[in-house]
Image (cartoon, rainbow, N blue to C red; front, top):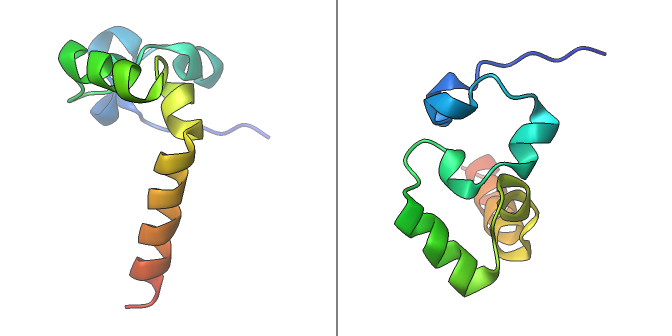
Length: 74
């Protein structure tokens, strides 16, 4: 099954052409709005170096789940 998505609004321009597997391995600051200082803080605080690390982080997942549940109950 082929899936397409326009990720241009959430990625730094240098990373827009990468496929999802490469994006998962890209540094966190490949996300638009995440600075290199932000990426360094995530690395120091949580050991997060890549977009995949961020997406798989237990705290990020917990926050996303809580938010989704809260939003669905409004």
